[in-house]
Picture (spheres, rainbow, N blue to C red):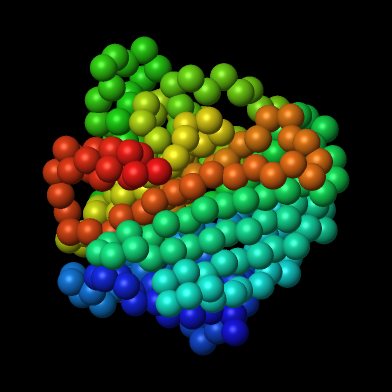
Length: 291
């Protein structure tokens, strides 16, 4: 089976690999659908694609074709249901970047979806000195396309709640942590979200976005290697609502990766009715203290 439906607390989630099924398109993996049942039946993710979708592996070299550019979409991947609340995706070493990965999802009542990611590089193909991995969440036509996080311009102190909403795809897309000094180099080639840097910086490793009457909060267990990325139209167009589907994305960077060494991080997402920003910070503090 390539996917399963999970119902825990207020949430219903469909989690699956990169196979096609009914309206779900091949190439998109992770959380095919995520619904808070207290607020209606509309998934926050574009129905044909996914959220927390493993999208790119990159090393700074220009990939020869789109299949390589989107290698995690196209390389074999398997789905395994571990329990009534937990599933894991496994991707064996990919053809070009030779990265093996395990992504585990777990629903926790009342409105949490946790993700943990582990990866191993099986060959050294990182001539520019870093491994980059990119996740895309294709949001289902929210009226407010913005990501919000505590931060500001690099010298901003104390941090302020900051709105990040790019005007164009691949322009000013990626927000670094204020202490992120890793300078990436790239071979000449296509424009990408991960190449285009914003002047903004985040301070705490979290962001939220508004979707109908809900708030989707995404929190990370570290700042090291984590970058936040926005596209106003990465999920395409919603013709019925005459608007675009934004992408609320993130990256994980590993400087000087070693072959056969495991790397990873954890994420907690929260899909709940809208709340104050103080409550957003409380969610982060509670999770951090519980780890």
